[in-house]
Amino acid sequence: NKVPVFVVGKPGSSKTLTMQVLASNLQGEQSPAPFWRKFPALYIFSYQCSPLSTAIGIKHQYEIACSYQRKARRTMTVLLLDEVGLAEHSPDMPLKVLHGILARPKV
Image (tube, rainbow, N blue to C red; front, side, top):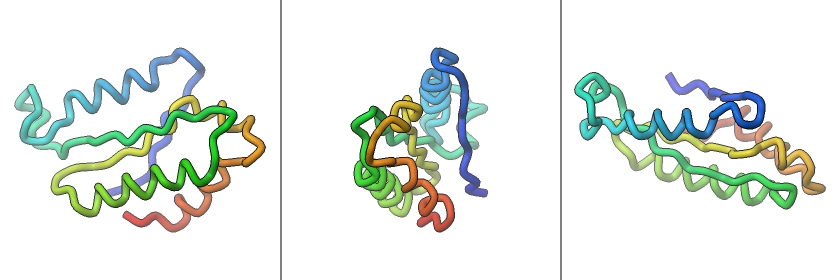
């Protein structure tokens, strides 16, 4: 099941650290602990948001993640929008691109 998941929290609440811990454990057959080997690997594509973020930049990183997902076996890709609140201050309104991505996902 590939349902979009949003990890939301106040600044400093370790959202990025949580994703790093998940990625370090979810490595498919190469996972350090036998328990995690039965799950697919997790591969994170990060996009560092800022007041200068653009819809084109976010969409480009999404396209890269989709391309990787189509070729990857037993891997789940994640598009991590780090500090997404900063993108709200961009005059380009880059977060609007998420509407189309979520309404019609490519993977």
